[in-house]
Length: 87
Image (cartoon, rainbow, N blue to C red; front, side, top):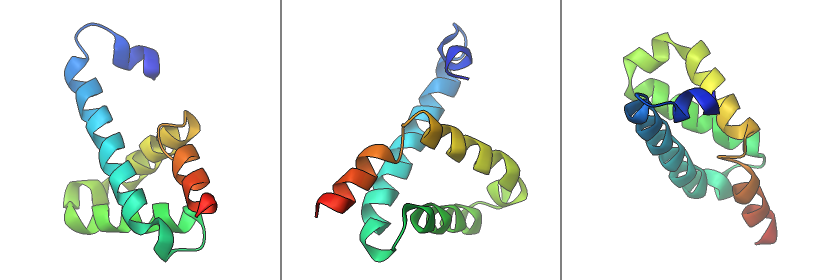
């Protein structure tokens, strides 16, 4: 997927992906101390997204795939988890 995002012509998609990553990072920082596990934080954030946007709620499968991808390639998760355990 990263190679697809980097291809010429996909600048808009890459920009939207990076924007989503930043929003997730902000939401993780906001919610990480309220929940016991990182999984709980992600679940809460996804619930907020689904509540806010009906299109996302109808495509939970794609949202879960993108969130999993973000986590898998460490765009979200690694820093947030280590920050939370350091406090």
